[in-house]
Length: 106
Image (cartoon, rainbow, N blue to C red; front, side):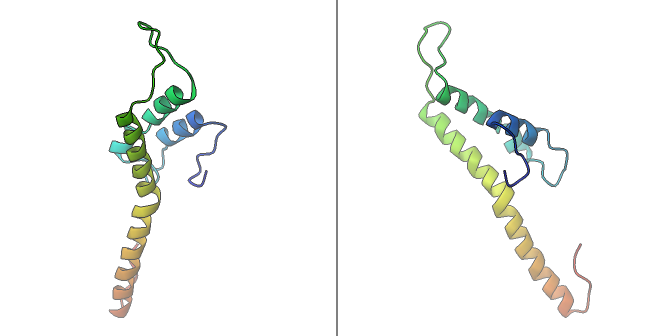
């Protein structure tokens, strides 16, 4: 996995993401509190799990699938979109600082 969360399965990778200690890579709170839901969606969609009361197979609902897509979009934004935007802004500021004879930002 490109962000350094390799593992034999999704559960292991999710655990690594949730246990990240590097503040620069750690998930923002809104993603941290919901990313484990992907494990739940995956279990319901990959394994026939039955309701203990009705014995009916529990399906992933439409709104849960949409939520999963929102979480994945949030992860994409966190790992790719926001860092690229920040680098672009920093480069613009550093060019302005250089033109003024100042050192680049840290």
